[in-house]
Length: 114
Length: 113
View 1 (tube, rainbow over the protein chains, first blue to last red):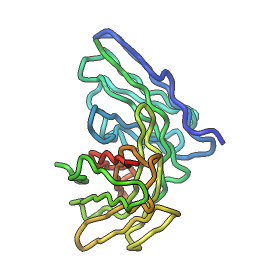
View 2 (cartoon, each protein chain N blue to C red; view 1 turned 90 degrees about the vertical axis):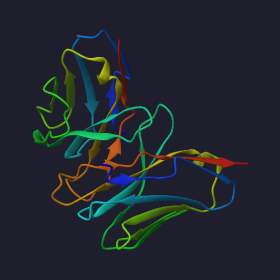
View 3 (tube, one colour; view 1 turned 180 degrees about the horizontal axis):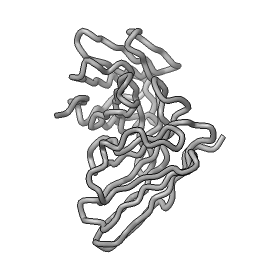
Protein backbone atom coordinates (compact mmCIF):
# COMPACT_ATOMS: atom_id res chain seq x y z
CA UNK A 1 0.00 0.00 0.00
CA UNK A 2 0.91 3.67 -0.14
CA UNK A 3 3.37 4.96 2.39
CA UNK A 4 3.44 8.26 4.22
CA UNK A 5 3.41 11.21 1.86
CA UNK A 6 4.39 14.81 2.55
CA UNK A 7 3.99 18.01 0.62
CA UNK A 8 5.61 20.15 -0.46
CA UNK A 9 8.94 18.34 -0.71
CA UNK A 10 10.82 21.64 -0.75
CA UNK A 11 9.81 25.05 0.52
CA UNK A 12 11.70 28.32 0.39
CA UNK A 13 10.27 31.05 2.58
CA UNK A 14 11.29 34.59 3.34
CA UNK A 15 11.85 35.34 6.99
CA UNK A 16 8.55 36.35 8.56
CA UNK A 17 6.37 34.32 6.19
CA UNK A 18 3.96 31.67 7.40
CA UNK A 19 4.29 28.13 6.02
CA UNK A 20 2.08 25.04 6.13
CA UNK A 21 3.43 21.52 5.72
CA UNK A 22 1.12 18.63 4.99
CA UNK A 23 1.33 14.96 5.96
CA UNK A 24 -0.80 12.08 4.67
CA UNK A 25 -0.21 9.07 6.94
CA UNK A 26 -0.61 5.42 6.05
CA UNK A 27 -4.31 4.62 5.91
CA UNK A 28 -5.59 3.25 9.22
CA UNK A 29 -2.61 4.37 11.26
CA UNK A 30 -3.77 5.72 14.59
CA UNK A 31 -0.65 7.63 15.60
CA UNK A 32 1.04 10.47 13.77
CA UNK A 33 4.29 12.19 14.67
CA UNK A 34 6.21 15.24 13.50
CA UNK A 35 10.01 15.44 13.79
CA UNK A 36 12.54 18.11 12.88
CA UNK A 37 15.92 17.11 11.49
CA UNK A 38 18.81 19.54 11.34
CA UNK A 39 21.79 18.86 9.09
CA UNK A 40 24.03 16.14 10.48
CA UNK A 41 21.69 15.31 13.34
CA UNK A 42 19.07 12.71 14.07
CA UNK A 43 15.38 13.61 13.91
CA UNK A 44 14.01 15.38 16.98
CA UNK A 45 10.47 14.94 18.23
CA UNK A 46 8.06 17.83 17.83
CA UNK A 47 4.53 16.57 18.47
CA UNK A 48 2.30 13.47 18.52
CA UNK A 49 -1.35 12.73 17.69
CA UNK A 50 -3.46 9.75 18.52
CA UNK A 51 -6.34 9.99 16.06
CA UNK A 52 -7.36 13.67 16.22
CA UNK A 53 -6.09 14.26 19.76
CA UNK A 54 -2.75 16.00 20.17
CA UNK A 55 -1.35 14.11 23.15
CA UNK A 56 2.14 15.55 23.30
CA UNK A 57 3.46 18.83 21.94
CA UNK A 58 6.43 19.11 24.25
CA UNK A 59 8.91 19.23 21.39
CA UNK A 60 7.48 22.25 19.60
CA UNK A 61 10.27 24.86 19.86
CA UNK A 62 8.05 27.92 20.21
CA UNK A 63 4.47 29.11 20.05
CA UNK A 64 5.09 29.91 16.38
CA UNK A 65 4.73 26.19 15.71
CA UNK A 66 1.25 24.71 15.54
CA UNK A 67 0.03 21.29 14.40
CA UNK A 68 -3.41 19.88 13.80
CA UNK A 69 -5.08 16.66 12.68
CA UNK A 70 -8.76 17.57 12.71
CA UNK A 71 -10.23 14.37 11.28
CA UNK A 72 -7.67 11.94 12.58
CA UNK A 73 -6.01 11.43 9.21
CA UNK A 74 -4.17 14.23 7.37
CA UNK A 75 -2.06 16.52 9.52
CA UNK A 76 -0.70 20.00 8.97
CA UNK A 77 2.31 21.57 10.68
CA UNK A 78 2.16 25.34 10.55
CA UNK A 79 5.04 27.67 11.29
CA UNK A 80 4.21 31.31 11.74
CA UNK A 81 6.63 34.19 11.19
CA UNK A 82 9.42 31.86 10.06
CA UNK A 83 12.96 32.47 11.27
CA UNK A 84 16.25 31.32 9.78
CA UNK A 85 16.71 28.82 12.60
CA UNK A 86 13.53 27.06 11.41
CA UNK A 87 15.43 25.84 8.33
CA UNK A 88 15.46 22.04 8.59
CA UNK A 89 13.84 18.90 7.21
CA UNK A 90 10.42 18.27 8.73
CA UNK A 91 9.55 14.59 8.88
CA UNK A 92 6.15 13.04 9.45
CA UNK A 93 5.73 9.46 10.65
CA UNK A 94 2.75 7.24 11.40
CA UNK A 95 2.28 4.02 13.31
CA UNK A 96 -0.53 1.51 13.53
CA UNK A 97 -0.90 1.62 17.29
CA UNK A 98 0.21 4.00 19.98
CA UNK A 99 2.99 2.08 21.69
CA UNK A 100 5.71 -0.43 20.99
CA UNK A 101 5.33 -0.32 17.26
CA UNK A 102 7.49 0.92 14.44
CA UNK A 103 6.97 4.37 13.00
CA UNK A 104 7.01 4.75 9.22
CA UNK A 105 8.39 7.98 7.85
CA UNK A 106 7.53 10.12 4.88
CA UNK A 107 10.19 11.66 2.62
CA UNK A 108 10.18 14.94 4.55
CA UNK A 109 9.78 18.59 3.64
CA UNK A 110 13.00 20.55 3.34
CA UNK A 111 12.35 24.10 4.55
CA UNK A 112 14.79 26.89 3.81
CA UNK A 113 14.14 30.27 5.38
CA UNK A 114 16.03 33.14 3.80
CA UNK B 1 21.85 15.76 27.05
CA UNK B 2 22.14 13.09 24.38
CA UNK B 3 20.12 10.12 25.63
CA UNK B 4 20.92 7.98 22.58
CA UNK B 5 24.48 8.02 21.33
CA UNK B 6 26.11 6.69 18.21
CA UNK B 7 29.77 7.37 18.77
CA UNK B 8 31.00 6.31 15.35
CA UNK B 9 30.08 8.88 12.72
CA UNK B 10 31.24 6.59 9.92
CA UNK B 11 32.11 2.98 9.15
CA UNK B 12 33.64 1.40 6.08
CA UNK B 13 33.26 -2.33 5.36
CA UNK B 14 34.07 -4.58 2.44
CA UNK B 15 31.26 -6.22 0.51
CA UNK B 16 30.41 -9.64 1.92
CA UNK B 17 31.83 -8.89 5.36
CA UNK B 18 29.92 -8.14 8.55
CA UNK B 19 28.92 -4.57 9.43
CA UNK B 20 28.47 -3.83 13.13
CA UNK B 21 26.85 -0.56 14.12
CA UNK B 22 26.74 0.41 17.77
CA UNK B 23 24.43 2.49 19.92
CA UNK B 24 24.46 3.42 23.62
CA UNK B 25 21.67 4.92 25.67
CA UNK B 26 21.48 6.54 29.08
CA UNK B 27 17.74 6.52 29.91
CA UNK B 28 16.92 3.26 31.71
CA UNK B 29 13.22 3.81 31.01
CA UNK B 30 13.69 3.04 27.31
CA UNK B 31 12.01 -0.30 26.53
CA UNK B 32 11.74 -0.36 22.75
CA UNK B 33 14.57 0.14 20.31
CA UNK B 34 14.65 0.54 16.56
CA UNK B 35 17.11 0.89 13.71
CA UNK B 36 16.41 3.01 10.67
CA UNK B 37 18.30 3.38 7.41
CA UNK B 38 18.35 6.69 5.58
CA UNK B 39 19.36 7.50 2.02
CA UNK B 40 19.97 11.15 0.99
CA UNK B 41 16.80 13.17 0.34
CA UNK B 42 14.59 10.37 1.66
CA UNK B 43 12.91 9.76 4.99
CA UNK B 44 14.24 7.13 7.39
CA UNK B 45 13.25 3.56 6.52
CA UNK B 46 12.42 1.17 9.35
CA UNK B 47 14.75 -1.84 9.48
CA UNK B 48 14.30 -3.80 12.66
CA UNK B 49 13.23 -3.36 16.27
CA UNK B 50 13.63 -5.05 19.62
CA UNK B 51 11.69 -4.95 22.85
CA UNK B 52 13.54 -4.82 26.16
CA UNK B 53 12.18 -8.25 27.09
CA UNK B 54 14.41 -9.76 24.39
CA UNK B 55 18.15 -9.68 23.85
CA UNK B 56 18.18 -10.56 20.15
CA UNK B 57 15.98 -10.14 17.13
CA UNK B 58 16.79 -11.34 13.64
CA UNK B 59 15.32 -10.50 10.25
CA UNK B 60 17.15 -11.83 7.23
CA UNK B 61 20.60 -10.26 7.02
CA UNK B 62 19.86 -7.93 9.95
CA UNK B 63 20.23 -8.84 13.63
CA UNK B 64 19.86 -6.49 16.56
CA UNK B 65 21.40 -7.32 19.93
CA UNK B 66 20.38 -5.64 23.18
CA UNK B 67 22.50 -5.60 26.33
CA UNK B 68 20.33 -3.93 28.96
CA UNK B 69 22.90 -4.01 31.73
CA UNK B 70 25.37 -2.13 29.54
CA UNK B 71 22.64 0.03 27.98
CA UNK B 72 24.01 -0.93 24.59
CA UNK B 73 22.59 -2.23 21.36
CA UNK B 74 24.13 -3.16 18.08
CA UNK B 75 23.00 -3.88 14.54
CA UNK B 76 24.77 -6.63 12.60
CA UNK B 77 24.45 -6.82 8.83
CA UNK B 78 25.68 -10.05 7.27
CA UNK B 79 26.70 -10.16 4.50
CA UNK B 80 27.09 -6.48 3.75
CA UNK B 81 26.06 -5.32 0.29
CA UNK B 82 26.80 -2.08 -1.60
CA UNK B 83 23.11 -1.15 -1.37
CA UNK B 84 23.47 -1.09 2.41
CA UNK B 85 25.53 2.10 2.12
CA UNK B 86 23.45 4.71 3.96
CA UNK B 87 23.16 6.52 7.28
CA UNK B 88 21.89 4.28 10.08
CA UNK B 89 20.01 5.74 13.02
CA UNK B 90 19.37 4.09 16.34
CA UNK B 91 16.16 5.18 18.11
CA UNK B 92 14.48 4.42 21.42
CA UNK B 93 11.14 4.96 23.14
CA UNK B 94 9.49 4.01 26.42
CA UNK B 95 6.02 2.97 27.52
CA UNK B 96 4.26 5.99 28.91
CA UNK B 97 6.53 8.28 26.97
CA UNK B 98 3.98 8.80 24.25
CA UNK B 99 5.84 6.51 21.89
CA UNK B 100 8.00 9.41 20.72
CA UNK B 101 11.33 8.29 19.40
CA UNK B 102 14.67 9.63 20.62
CA UNK B 103 17.30 9.27 17.90
CA UNK B 104 21.05 9.05 17.86
CA UNK B 105 23.09 11.19 15.49
CA UNK B 106 23.59 8.42 12.96
CA UNK B 107 26.45 6.37 11.51
CA UNK B 108 27.36 6.62 7.84
CA UNK B 109 28.00 3.10 6.54
CA UNK B 110 29.96 2.64 3.34
CA UNK B 111 30.14 -0.83 1.84
CA UNK B 112 32.99 -1.04 -0.61
CA UNK B 113 33.34 -3.44 -3.51
